[in-house]
Image (cartoon, rainbow, N blue to C red; front, side, top):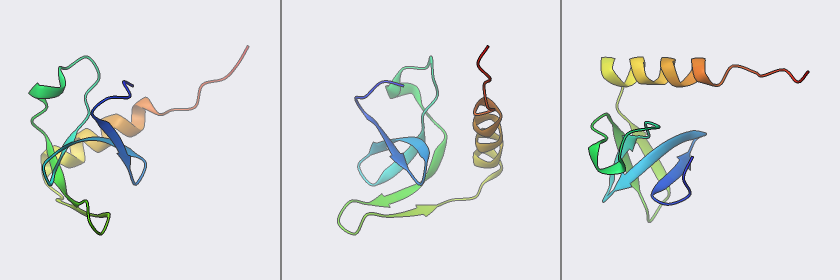
Amino acid sequence: MPNHGVELIDGIPVILKGSDMFAFQPGTPITNNKIKLGSYNTTTHIASWEYTEEMKKWVEEFQIGLSPRSRK
């Protein structure tokens, strides 16, 4: 994950644009991320998540990608 423009909020990688949070999608330019996850208040550091079908699908795919890897 690049260290520029991506933040971890509640353990989920997001891109902050103003007060909006967008899903980080590897392989996609940061400017093209269209899945809005909610909003983030930079003063109080509180995230407000929007539970849409698009967000649910993205979170499920993200969690699948986090499957534990074993060492050989």
